[in-house]
Image 1 (cartoon, one colour):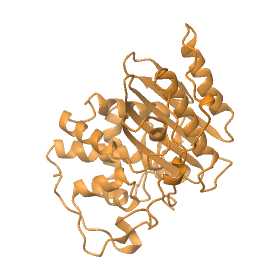
Image 2 (cartoon, rainbow, N blue to C red):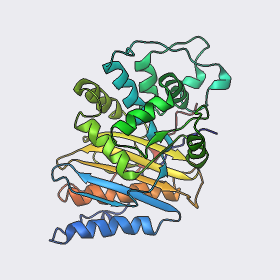
Image 3 (tube, one colour):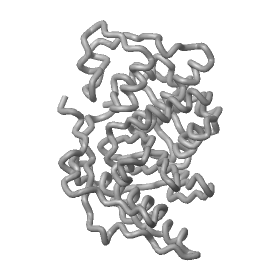
Length: 315
């Protein structure tokens, strides 16, 4: 199975006493890292993260170089390859590709329900893939662009441990990775770097990078990193979830902007419910980062927020 169906991760209301900013002392950065590392170490499974503070360039991580299943966070790389090919004149934003037959679709979000013969363009497929994490859109784009082509482009950016994976790939090493990681593989540091390259307008042309940030900023599945910051803050993100893993990756454009990538694997708790341990761990780590970096802007979701968590639309 490529990816299991998505459910809302949930926004968890907590007591304000749990979200006070950490003390800002000469040791405060190390205090932050200790707090974040403690979340990972207490997790029933494997958990890693990478945080980059954009104003200072400071980076901290835990298991930052270890490989994790990407789940849907790899879709950012697929989008990156598409806009690069448009920059190169090999593809147009308006080029169309028909929805595959039902046997080639996955019941995750909207494209699964399209009528036969519907032919969205690259713009439509990319927006479906990123904003609502449509798996059929991802499958169409992955095979249209070519998984090997996508991975070559990632390697040229220095991201050699980040790969989109497909059963159609011929290399034995890629097939082994597919069996180990599913849709894709990355490290917390490399996914953080991919987002940084998009932010710096170095992953493609400035126009293409700006479009990617705008698309990432319209995220439907915003209940991890996105749920831990005030709603007026722009968050360009892509999350992911499979049975054994939860993940989120985001550029947070706040008064103290940062890039945060978080991954879990081998979760003991594989329930598809809002109180899954992986979902809670992502929220806890994300909230700690926000409140540390914004000591005068501590944020607690309003009571009742959990009633409005993303559901997948019920389709």
